[in-house]
Image (cartoon, rainbow, N blue to C red; front, side):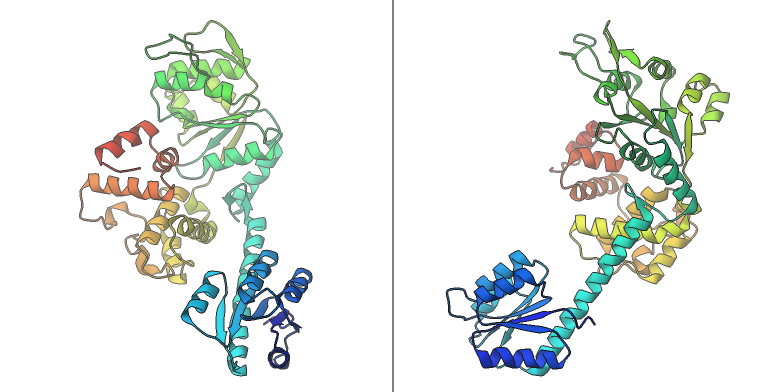
Length: 450
């Protein structure tokens, strides 16, 4: 217990004020007193009191509620305890509504005061320690939203720093869900282009024609519905970075077009006759074995070598198991806050279940598993039963599937994603891994309001 945390007692009755101060000093606390609200505000401005005992009825134009509100303006983290000889339900409700942590009635019992102060300071000590640990973990294991203490991942993060300010093309390889986009963002936001656009294009989500228009833009009349000129993602990313996700899925024609852009930094809009020149750094990502795709004739060899100037291979989550507790705690904090559920963390038994799983879907699967557990959690702590459906060894055939139709499962997933993204269809579609237009179709089909 930090006895050196100061305490302030505010009361216009000298006997009451000095008596309470004496009790607290006997317990070893540093205590100061004030006879009215104005003096209390002066003292609070100069000193960061951990606890302020404030009398409700005081002369001089500033009562206890007003004094408490002024204290909170100066010191938001101070715990204010209202004291009164005139206890009513209305005054208690008002005090608590305005931010009082406790409400006690005169005559005060010294033992109750000691217990109350001890309880509040224990909580403050715990909060302070947690804040320090969070900052330490953030400094130690977090870099541009990448949370890790795995040596291989640390090497990758060091590499992102080294290449961040270069214009060289980066190819990120790794299984689905390993965090390829996060690494791409780390490269971009660590370098000289950090204040310029970072544009993401999912190459697997669009047909060849749509992807061509998405990348390079189009001119008026280029196709039916092209009523005006539209800039493509390469133009929008000018000066910054374009991240081409799932580059291994693009068609042979687009492979040729992309090769020209990488070689010459210029292109034509669809239906256009005027060349557009851009200064764009390209970061590409794939979960495919591109050398094998080249051997089998599905990917251009010259494009592969153009993309593979700097290669980053991300390990699967099963290869960096020491990161599972860090990532799981991070997801619990973030998702519980987004969903408005009070979940404090994971029990040792729950962590043991997570550590035993093989995570074929990697970090993305872990995030989804944590979200499901939070949604169904009945207590303030995720425990082993919350992951009972997650079988040891990661066999998906052994998952416990609810006895509902596939359509109902899809509807529930969409509703959960919309709730988590606060109704933002664009963000929900990204979280679900589907195109926004596809999500709109499903919203209409399942009659989901948004």
